[in-house]
Image 1 (cartoon, rainbow, N blue to C red):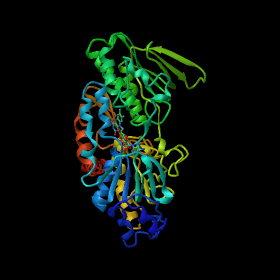
Image 2: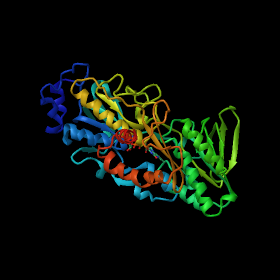
Image 3: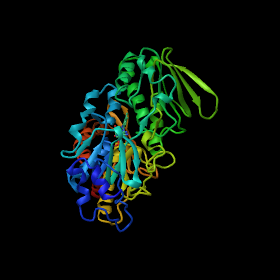
Image 4: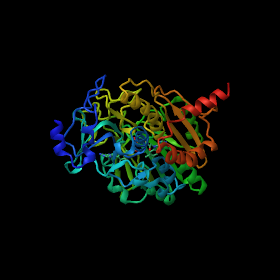
Length: 450
Ligand SMILES: Cc1cc2nc3c(=O)[nH]c(=O)nc-3n(C[C@H](O)[C@H](O)[C@H](O)COP(=O)(O)OP(=O)(O)OC[C@H]3O[C@@H](n4cnc5c(N)ncnc54)[C@H](O)[C@@H]3O)c2cc1C
């Protein structure tokens, strides 16, 4: 696209300013192809796709780097949710409203909020397509589109949620139904599922089981409950140290774990859940339930499937240490939508945001990124109303713990950290671009012990 052509398509002076900036159309020394443009209505130096945990954290950081007026976030939702709180909402500890804030309150002041949905990406032209045929171009792109939920891949859902006795902590629409189903519990099976796909927060499907067990004990109904965790996986947790601790918990509390069981159908009118046995193709099991908690199948957002920025599975294809795109050096990604081989959590987003900030700073100066992400992720495994096992680990599924104590033990202090401290850290530090994960705290605490 020629500059003249681009000018004729500019809708405002501001959207054309990039054409006037000296050097803006030059290739960088190591092949940033930031010169290509489409006939876009608007141009931003940094364009962020998605206003979730990763998108807002990076917008705040980019605002400090290039100024608010040069950054825009594309996000269709009016509400931003702190999703990790939903475990406690489903367990009746917190209200859904406590996890929600208006999107406009979390978008950094002065940063443009484009209230739309991305429908296609054209990284060869540094351009994205939004709804209503609107195009926006950029110099640097940060993709933070999260992971998509697919309740519809289970026969009988999502319409089954109109019935009682069934809930799901994974969505704002269904999380309160979990708490209702738990309170309604009288007698029978309480079933908790884990799908046969990647998920966000792989601990959440079982955290709600431990809370339900605790609730049923508190209310005297536990002797009448048969609690089971039907998981598609072959292990209870990916990291041995925490898996061993969790196996002790399930034994101690008389919880049944059935491996390689994948939920394929819910007959909500009859309170029946149908599972396939992944070890025996064609064999299914039907369980009557008194309470069912569904963790839905998940996958990459539709816009990323078959996109030039994605790998063959639909996840954004980034370098696992720098978070820079493998083919397009002016494109970056963070969080659940990436193919980073670590567990998808907000804690991982925090650590990634610190690294990505450094990566982009260097790329903007035409230097090679050096800071390396080690895969840090964390999962506070809530095992009761005042207990948490704090799992923290890296790309190699090796523990990478912040505190100089045995974190595989159930602790009340860690519960308060999860329930009371983490939300504060999320709203006031991560989303403001000041929390890059606990690595400095870890260093300090561990050095202090030497
Ligand atoms: C029940 C539950 C419990 C959890 N517990 C924990 C926990 O204890 N600890 C922890 O660290 N993490 C936990 N998580 C995971 C954590 O919430 C996510 O990993 C984190 O939010 C990922 O951030 P993200 O920015 O990648 O995606 P998100 O925060 O999901 O944001 C993605 C954004 O992209 C937007 N978007 C999607 N498609 C488009 C489009 N086409 N165009 C524009 N915008 C689009 C969405 O509207 C959304 O705002 C939990 C999650 C759940 C559901």
